[in-house]
Image (cartoon, rainbow, N blue to C red; front, side):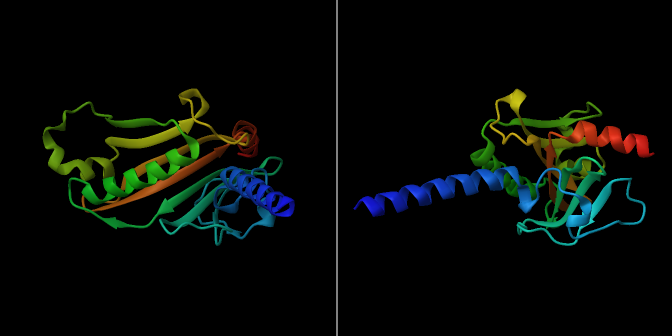
Length: 195
């Protein structure tokens, strides 16, 4: 009986530590990892330090493209996952539903979230039937942000997590999910010196 309790306790500790580790290593990527240790490519025209992953250890089906920012001394400091295309009506019904599902998943991991949904132009929503068009034109910003200032519970290495609703047109939307590590300031300072 004692052995069973020991094994149960060990499995519980392993599961908790594994869950905590995966929270600190989104998509299986770890803060500070050198670009040379990962499967990446440099796309034409991408900024200094910005690379596209050709594979990640723990991909998610909602996302198809993964981008990372690296500096020589700081290694990996930022990750962006770009979602699959989601055909949607002009009201954004389908992409809004997917955004809500993904936000709920992330809330279960990180807790309190701050939501944003506003128009930069300050226009009213009289033309709400063109909601997704406003997103695609960059006039409407829809996002959910997790950070300590908002009461989120993040692993020590993470500065923030951001989920953004984007659109290519009034009929196609997609999500993007960004993880900013706490070495981002030093990383960006270093990249500024390179330029």
